[in-house]
Image 1 (cartoon, one colour):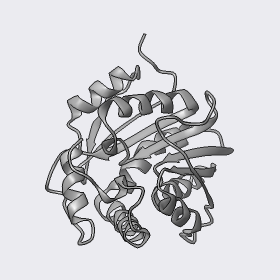
Image 2: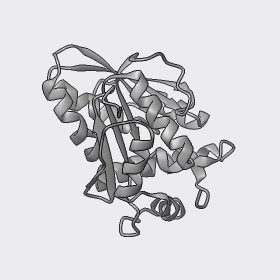
Image 3: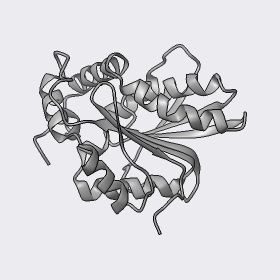
Image 4: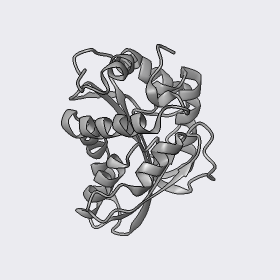
Length: 221
């Protein structure tokens, strides 16, 4: 692993964690993090039935991305029940209390994305945005395989493309540098997907993002 980020430390000052998460949510909105996830989800919503789905957001932060996903799903007649998981207690508490005014409640639990306490095909959609770069490669591969196991309809991964162009924000400047150094090139991301047994390929998106999405169970033989 390269460097240390504030959110890697479970003992980090709660006030600093809150400021960091608010900056991340703002940067997600401004620089493509939210759009990258919603764009990957749209085809699944378009093909889906008009009913209630469950969406699990791993490393949910303030819950801004799953709430944006819920707004997109409503345009297709789909109601998303949102569940977020976090390892950071402060983040979990803040996400639970956050309200974007769009009527998308978010239930948040403390859990490890590398060891999801869920059975096979137990949720409709799994989203993990800017999570994998926080863990060693072997753990990231295990996470991806786990996401594929628990999802019924779709898995969407979004992370940072390795670059310094996207650095922005005052509070997150140190973490931005470390995050972008930890980011992925397409070949590296594709290799992790293959090692997880998933038939999917990574794509670059605006804002120094890299994404992959697939229907669960589409595994390599």
